[in-house]
Image 1: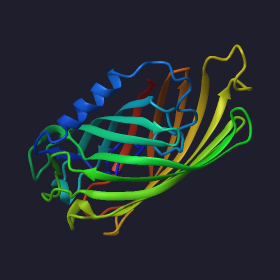
Image 2: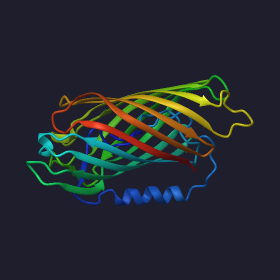
Image 3: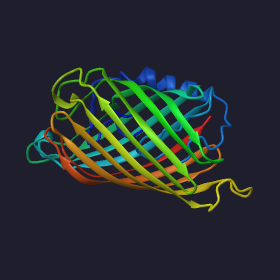
Image 4: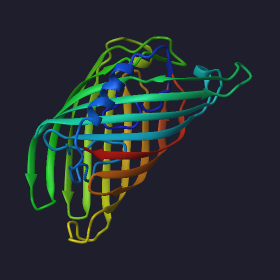
Length: 298
């Protein structure tokens, strides 16, 4: 599942079988180019990898594009070949109403497998699984000009991007998912907590359903007082915990420190995902992952 995060599944590495995501990618680019620029500070205190309850204003977009590098160690599923992965994930959110947005996540992935004693090297590129979802903010309580508490429900569908994996020849199904996210901003502090459950409709292999959970804390480094007349941008420190537990017993937990620079209608963010715990049965473990992203408000 990819809602709000920069990869389609923690630890996965799709191998292309076709261009099933091309139409969705072109649609996302087209609707973004048609929207006017000008929504201020649309993504305040949204984490780098996890989810937030914040949404664009009615009739406007967020577009978050993130370039990620991920390194996997070799195991039986890759014939002892190490995997180096570069992905470009574009996340588009459009607000239908003041409290309802539609979200589309499209990953494009390049994989390189180094040679091992059991197999030769290999490289491939293609679309990963695509997520289409609805975010409905069901509760909001503002305690100040910039202080707020919000809770949103999320439901959607993960669609095959025309890919399979190096370690499983079974294509993933059309998997529905649902969950919720709570966000709070109080002064210089912000936090987010989310849970998402994905159902497995294909059965077996890499399509097992599971629970994605994310916690994040953001601290505004500067300015000390948000909204000053001289303040046109803000710096944030970000700390996240990102986890995924699958019904086949796979379990991963990452600590992700990061940094964020937020201007009026654009934001730069970057983070590193450090493995804390991994117990995987059907794919290699992640050694390190990091990414840099640009978020625009239209």
